[in-house]
Figure 1 (cartoon, rainbow, N blue to C red):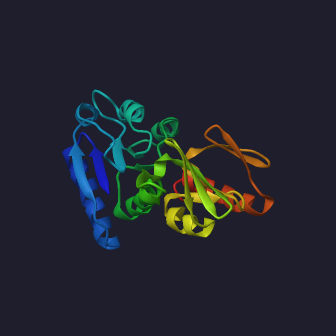
Figure 2: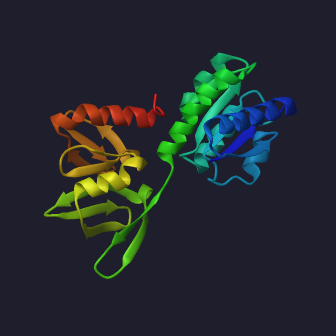
Amino acid sequence: MRIAIVEDEQQQRELLRDYVCQYARDTGAHHTVELFGSGEELLERYSPQYDIILLDIEMPGLNGMETAERIRARDADVVLMFVTNMAQYAVGGYAVGALDFVLKPVNYNTFSLRFARAVKRAGLRKNGEILLTLPDCVRRISTQQIHYVEVMNKTLHYHTELGEFVVRGTMQSAEEELGRYSFVRCNHWYLVNLGHVTELRRDTVLVGDTELEISRRNRNAFLTALTAYVGGGG
């Protein structure tokens, strides 16, 4: 994963970098870390390339909250985590979709617990690609572009931002391939991308502009999965 650390104090920047590197060693993962001394420095060449951004709130110039607002205007998916001296500042973080905050002085045990949650959230949101074998070609498609998959008469109908694609297959095979990308069944016939769910009603779920039936059998599991997705696994 790609991690950005935005902190105006050099000692704190390096401490957070060391904690990320220690967490990677402890978990056997690999993370690329980039350091920025201000919100302006990050935003100067910002593109949606990071999985997690650690943001100090109290910085000269653009503070962490203002930086987060500008990040959100360009990147809806990156996981934001605030680092601050005062807990009341972090409450406003929920307005910009921040996952969590860590209070200074930061110790590794607390950091690793909060960072693990951020890693899990980033993993849930991370994009993947699949191949669809169509009658005239093999189409590569991003999982983020898929709204839901429908099974009908031993064929799978992929409802996507690019249109509908029909391939032969079973719901079980689709579920095995897409489950890691936060696709969950709302009933026997539909496998839904949680990233496109906008509303959960009594007997239906709204996926983009499409309303799909949710079965009584699947409702609790679906709600649990949606809550975990939105809350980063917590």
